[in-house]
Amino acid sequence: MMATVHSALSTGSGFDAPLIETGALTVALAHGLAAGGVDVLVIDADAHGTRLAQRIAAATKIRLRSDERGLPTLVASRASLGPDNVVRHCWSLPKRSSSPTTGSVLLAAAPCHPDGARHTAAWLAERAEQLAALGQRFVVVVSLPGAGVQAYRALQAVAHTNVVADPRQGTAAPGGRRAVLAAFGLHSTPDPVTVLCAGTLLGAVGPVSERVLLGARPRRREHAALGALETAAACLAATAGCAAAAPAQPGGTR
Image 1 (cartoon, rainbow, N blue to C red):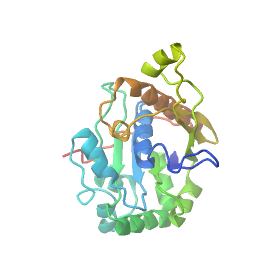
Image 2 (cartoon, one colour):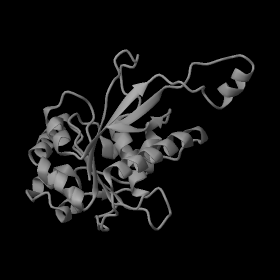
Image 3 (tube, rainbow, N blue to C red):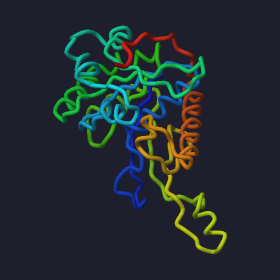
């Protein structure tokens, strides 16, 4: 299975930027899918230079450099997009569960510089069919941050499903301290949510920090958002009919 993930803005929603950054959302969904026992390959098709690997490294306190392993080294190798070769150019992200059935999450990160990011996004688009074929071994989740990129259309065209993160005004009353205040008649504006859709509704995610989505320890109030993402990942897997993939052997973290 291959899925793409990108963010959109609702007409009249009042938001001028996505509530959840696409790369961080992709990583969180990948870990949710891996919790179901499949190996997940995250392809960072970023065409803007959003430094996903460096942000994950900062959040999880591990070493990740796209010039050592990632799409830049894969492109430079002039090899095919075969699964074994792709794995050699991936980082293995720390698992978020101690369960022995949890799958691996592999990351093929884009270059940091926008020029390099545009190049690798176009390179992936030219090999879209090969990328989709990797879905026979992994669950492939492709991050498409930003908008108006021609290369993204080619990747979305071959994907089995395209996940859209749509920011919406919240409807449920905020929890925590504000819920207590509400009991005394001091009402607050409901927290906004990010609605995830892939043909069907996958779920709605409340406020959560980017660092937590990338692997940092969550605060108590963020556990609900992570739970909603795990549920959305399970719905995505069920919709796509994911089966457990064969274990991969990446280079690992350094």
